[in-house]
Image (cartoon, rainbow, N blue to C red; front, side, top):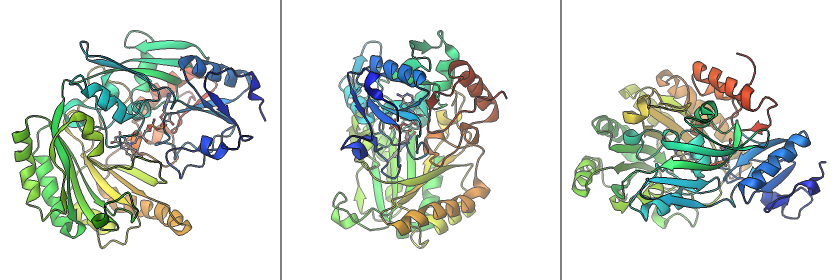
Length: 454
Ligand SMILES: Cc1cc2nc3c(=O)[nH]c(=O)nc-3n(C[C@H](O)[C@H](O)[C@H](O)COP(=O)(O)OP(=O)(O)OC[C@H]3O[C@@H](n4cnc5c(N)ncnc54)[C@H](O)[C@@H]3O)c2cc1C
């Protein structure tokens, strides 16, 4: 057992000796059983540097964590300090320069609201309480993504503590290799203390969700596919089968009801947005229709993702395209008559700027696929804890004929290295960055980077 009394921090150090250890070591994803040597709740970049130096002196490793949304592939963390950044919540907006400096613990909804006060927005995804840092380092697939690309390619500079414990600011001119790797290659190269992000001059959008009974089935998914294919880059959307759990957080008529939902965000005017969504309203009689003209701060809530820690076992896969047979297979494995134990299975529309190499891009420049599929189940019983991983494999096997190469980092939740996610030439460059900046493998990420010579 390491003695942590020599680690000076303005935050807090929790160890297994503490009465609240189980709470301290928990991740947002309650299915992740994290058992680090200690948890450091850093209050500042100085605390992060102190923790990294302490780890180096004591032969420990360091795993940075904002919220633990992406914690499933990270556990069990032996010999590792879990460096939680949830106390580092500062946001500075420079409205004139259209930039934001966000500390490592800032949540998506917090940045969305702060930017919106200035008539601006960043590139939010579907979860309000996901950490901006982890989301961005893994890519950042946003509601505005088909128009503006991945969030990682709207980063101007990154403040960090390197694996030797030195604070630095990296950007396109300074330590450009490290700056490149952190933008889409995950966090396994350094501990990030703040991001400087470009903001966009968009204050309102037409966005929301249509909830249909899942019985609308394959015909609805086909109608969605045809509609999505005809949309300009200004429209980003998701279709999914969802069975909300029978818990009080879910409105009464929806509890346990199998649904097909279509969510979308439309950049442009309100009338234009209404006209864009109109054909989707013809798909069936919606149980609920939440589309409205709304501030961009509301975008991270249109998909109704959970805002409190929950247990989840999920997995993603990239899909090249959706011919009718692929849709039939998807409905058979994930639809209302499939017997699926999952909470949801969804298809997120890519293309547009998400499919084009971004100028000056980081490790994730674009994704060469038509859709990202993602499924997740809640292991509320031991039986479900066994059934869900087995069924994830069934879904993957079923959809494999239409799979694209590679995966999407943020939706890869099984334990694997970045080599299983990003293209080989990108992984070779990432390995070189790892060798240069973290030769001792001090920094642990949810997907490891092999430092071995290629
Ligand atoms: C309900 C839900 C909805 C989601 N929706 C979207 C979506 O719309 N689009 C999308 O792209 N993704 C989405 N995700 C995936 C999400 O972006 C990833 O899980 C991401 O890793 C979360 O980042 P985090 O910081 O909250 O999580 P964490 O688990 O805290 O971090 C994940 C990883 O990021 C790295 N990291 C975090 N902080 C630091 C740091 N300070 N320094 C260095 N590395 C760091 C670490 O390697 C860490 O293991 C969703 C996930 C969930 C559970």
